[in-house]
Amino acid sequence: MPATVPVRVRLAPSPTGTLHIGTARTAVFNWLFARHLGGAFLLRIEDTDRERSKPEFTDNILDGLRWLGLTWDEDPVVQSARIEAHRQAIAQLLASGHAYRCFASDAELSAMRERQQAEGRAPRYDNLHRDLTPEQQQAYIAEGREAVIRFRIDDGATITWNDLVRGEMRWAGSDLGGDMVIARRAPADAIGDPLYNLVVVVDDAAMAISHVIRGEDHIANTGKQLLLYAALGLTPPVFAHTPLILNQEGRKLSKRDGVTSVGDFRAMGYTAEALVNYMTLLGWSPPEGIGERFNLEQAAAVFSFERVNRAGARFDWDKLNWLNAQVLHGLAAGELRQRLLPLWQARGWGEGVGADAAWQEDLCTLLGPALSLLVDGVDQAAP
Image (cartoon, rainbow, N blue to C red):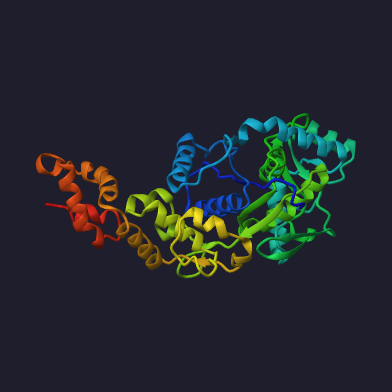
């Protein structure tokens, strides 16, 4: 991508749950890259999952990003407000022959997958309805069948891109699972709800996103999306696929591992400074001279994808606890008091001598050097 193209990156969380540590780490890498190059960090709320998306999850995500210090540069884009633009793109693909209506029923698709499994083949759509004649289409419509809209994927195609983390990437069209559904089932004279890979391409192009920075679990999606960019006549962004955060057993960190929400870390007594510091170290090696303790601005000054690892990053509680302790030990007594005061007040403390600010600061001077978590300043301050 020419250097004259402004750097514009985005975080695109789905408001179907609270802010996950993996999403937050992706936000950190996007923010650092944008700030390092003087670009823009943007947000897009991907709320097209109508049943699971909730306003309270959007609020949680935005509050969590603010707490971490990851400020954004433009008003967030709400994906569901752009559904007509998505449908226009699908109509363009239908008109150009890159997409078609597929009338296969759920029962037929299930039978197809069972047959493939019995034959030892990986499940994939067999493109059965790719070339229906007008008469065949009318026969299905007469039966009352609705249709999904599928995007044609040439099994013989080779998709390549230069990934900022992984170098040259190559993906075979035959490995993408057959023709891709880009709109949900609807009457044959309508376009159903557009689906993820299509809407991401349309929205990234509309937002002039220059670089898409996301987890390695999206690599297969990138192959599909590059085909959509070409079919729609759009210029694709540069891609960077970052390593996943792993648990101690080497598996992707999940809810089964307990704490995964940024809000949970906050409630446990971790500071925003320590958490963003640690998330930056999950997959990125700082250059010599900066050390392992730094703030966002210091990291942004030296950040590059050349130092992002390809291998997954194992979550290390001991390292996070050490960083958090260092942050707390470095706070002046007045600042530590401001952070502990809401926790003390939640316990009902603050009457009599305990309400005196000078006395509270003296207490913080005594407690500070022994704290590892902010909540330790509640337990250790107990009468």
